[in-house]
Image 1 (cartoon, rainbow, N blue to C red):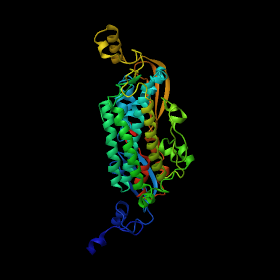
Image 2 (tube, rainbow, N blue to C red; image 1 turned 180 degrees about the horizontal axis):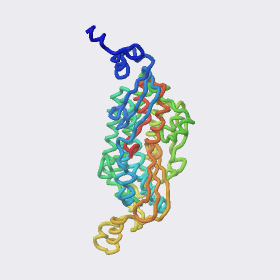
Image 3 (cartoon, rainbow, N blue to C red; image 1 turned 180 degrees about the vertical axis):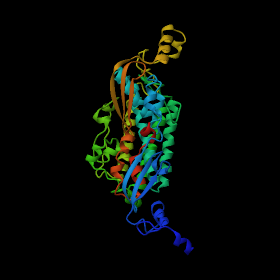
Length: 429
């Protein structure tokens, strides 16, 4: 072996050629001193909540640079919308934030209705039912968000606890829409169907049970020493930085900004309901957790008011409408389609060509569980949009990672990602 080593060529620095190659391709322990390590986290890491890839530059255990790499789930929803009628795109909105499909349906329908100029003509019962859908979706999404956040930090029991309550919401959604996951319940100008018999009683029962779950969750987490150490002072987002990065939803309110579209720009019947907007103080992971817990309590408060004030009562004995009375926008009743020529023509035109929208452009933003879900529609008339742009809150919220992660330990990454509560389905679209 000594003879072989003597035959190795020397480089200009006096090292052997083999040693020079080794120092660049596979450095030893001595060569790593003072250098940084580039680590790929994702796109299949369980803590990235989907196909998010983070390219992390590490100095030991400290993150010095973070670059999010998105687009692994891209489906081209916005371009698909430009080749479909307005009604045909409703099922695609289910697949945005797939943890709150009911809320996505409502936000998109309100944007199209704003374009059509009928957003102020929706029947009161329809508006109350839409609010109930949005708030059930908010509780469902936050239950999963808090549960996964806790599980990422080691609290598996809490995930099972919150998921149990979430299954009850899915039972309610299935009874209401006929589907558990991708609901496609909202329609342009109204809803697909009215409440089934006994649904409101089931909803009231769920609300009383889920409040007990909130208490149990807070007993397990809020004063838990491990949880507090993992979240307090970690991932701090100052108020001005949160505004500069365009954050919305609980991530913005966790930094102390009292901005909620349900209050700032009321839609549906939110201006007739009494609820509060919780805000944080420090802007850390712990505050974002507390904000989501209180938001769920406020959603229960809203749902109870909707159940008490619902026009037409639980079984709608007074036959309050849930759709606007315009056959050029809403599909006519099936029995009339089968017996009358005019309704048959309206059905044929709506299904084949879609609603005849006027030229113009609108933007509507709704307060979804992840933040402001907005739809920009550019219309040149006819039944399909000329351009459609989705303002996805998860996409915007993830933009702060290059600012937020550097300076933290590698182990803090999962806590920070869990506290942001994003969904790659709407981020990549």
